Length: 408
Image 1 (cartoon, rainbow, N blue to C red):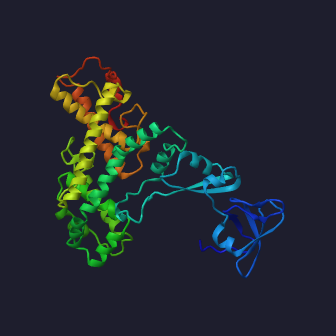
Image 2 (tube, helix red, strand yellow):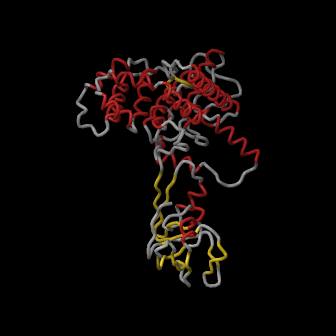
Image 3 (cartoon, one colour):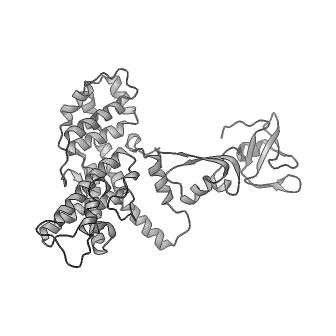
């Protein structure tokens, strides 16, 4: 791999070779060694890290099958104990691997969490990947089992994951980012930024969140074409460390002050995700429409299933009205709450929105506010003149009152 090893370094052999005798045993994959001498031709003389006779590793073997031994996969590290362990964790890690990684150190265990993981950087869309918080990544890892399961269960889980709001929303956001690239580039070009600043904005990690914020502003009925130039000129950007991040902050403040969003809103998919506007490419329009409809259907189905199964969190939203129109509005509000729960992996918490302490990002905070408004609207509908439903166990009114506000 291009690494350099010298005398005193810890190395690991990654290929079994019975021809290399190490004092009554042969060199194995996973063995750890201390380098005691290095030949000019590339050969290494090594001794076992736990002590024992030395063995000479030929240059060909060294170049192909020897690595520095200071880091290893969790599978290879299983069974080892160190004073201090440092482990890298990314969204594809399973909870079993996380357990091994976090329990190797006697005195300390440190986790380094990849919050910008791209499973396919060669073909992915650079700025379309939205960073996660470390907490979000670790929550996902703890829910990801690596143990063997039946083929039927594997198929069921894969199907459910592919149809989840979290997956569909990520796909929708990725397609929307690509579909609206020309739109946002043109807006930036006439916003008052000079060409060099535009290039800096587009290269920033904050570019994706900035365009998402602009799309959210449009969903609220705000005029981003007029507002962005004003926000650029609001204060100088000459000394800004990250222009895109500064503009993102200004857009968020502007939306917070002016963008009260009605619930439900036709500008939101499943009551949560801003719809992309101004897309002309027919293939991209098709991709967005398919995921739009899939999210709407998923949210509606989850709401209806929750009512049919009398799940605890549904009881806290009151009773579905008897009248068909009132029941339809109530289910629409419940569907927005169901979409929020599915997006953020809230599965067992009896509170409709889970606990506020789990909110760790601006995106989740905004979506929780929308879900909260929908939950309160459902409660109001359940108490209206058409309230009540047969064979439905709702929470007592005093319990519903306690759930109003941010604790809902």
